[in-house]
Length: 576
Image 1 (cartoon, rainbow, N blue to C red):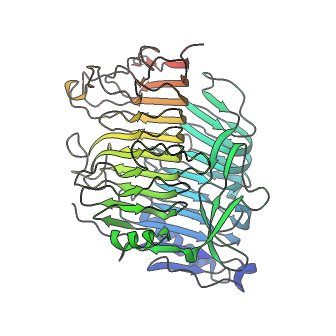
Image 2: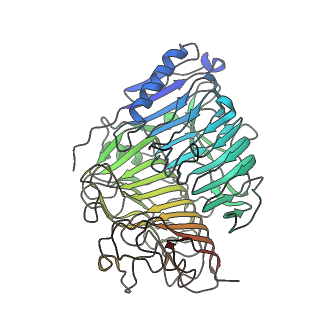
Image 3: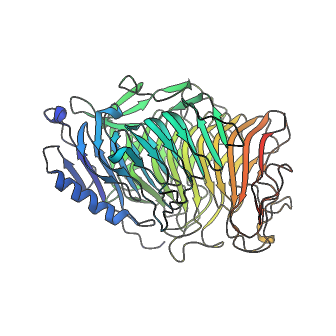
């Protein structure tokens, strides 16, 4: 394993004046926790925010992990959001925390290029943006949750490249302009107006859907969110008690959950959590707490684990702050979740180790027949990385055995670039991004890229995916090195197993960037031909001048081309 330096943890804590007389002592969230009150100097707070951003602005593969936590109140600050940085409003409603100023994400590369603007997020507060426009130029592993923007939002930086993102449980009083964004998922959102499109824009449970129909513009519109539990969130109540809110399961919902001030659900005092610190906690200390029935809060940093964390009790909440990172060092899983109802895992980055793991996160027990329909396991903002920062190897990243599991935003990434010596066909190895064995699994916001076999292998029945974005691997050295077990050229990005009878997916974009000549992919999506396996709105694009994707789904759709550019689209499969 390469030398790792544990990240420092910085949490900025702001207390509103109405809370000041009641605020309990802040929990220990790490050695660099900064607690501020509105009575403190705004200049001092701004200087610390700026210092953190100066470190994180271009730290794509650095060790820093940071979270900003604002308690209820009003602030006049500029808050740039860099790599591995999470900004949290810790009120029951986003309107409890009000920031007047420039909260923004900027393109990480030159020429306004945001295609590597990864790993950052904002949630749980309201923004009155400077000049009325909030810039959120981002790509993968980005979350924008429980936000209220008093103005407009732009999802790009001066129309530079940008490659997709996530917005949920959010209200924008004005217009959302996607501009040059290549793809985007908006779930359970509200706005006055949406404008813009490129390849694959998906709207689920959103009010004021934009006009027009696939394929021009490429809008996929699903009227209601069929089933979801919003991500658990940290907050402080009016008496100063720190707690975590676990939102209730919703069916057929539209728009934000917090219009009445509180998101429906249950509250767990933070005193019921084990608060882990990467500076001194180990797999053993964390597992001891989990076995005792504690919930788990992982403070920012990297946790080197010589054995998997085991979440064994029903309804356990695992919540990471500031992109807390789990790094297996002994060739094991990083985390194993038992086949128990109501477990939630949120806000974590799983970073593969040099010794090959069978998977990084395993959910449930193989061949389980238990139903969790009334109380599903749910995963929120869980991200996976193989290579890039260190050498990483795994057979699979996320394996789901449990029935009825909900995945609410994930990016499962085998690195295509990174630090020298961490990326290469025989260096950062990963067969599959996601394997689904459970039945009735529902996924919103599925981003899976660059794995060496199937990006997604779906074996379970009655699965549903709302939005899929995938780049197939850049680096197969030859066609013979990248040929599937049936002799097809390449491995399909999205594979539904041949014996599956029922499956459905909406809004899929699959892209190629081959770096070596004479390498092609026969089929982007491969599914059994049966009436209840149905796909809606698919596109393939060749982003470079080598190779091609020969068909969109099975033998349908035709080939991508680069000169001139052809981007095949299929509206429905099987055709009506």
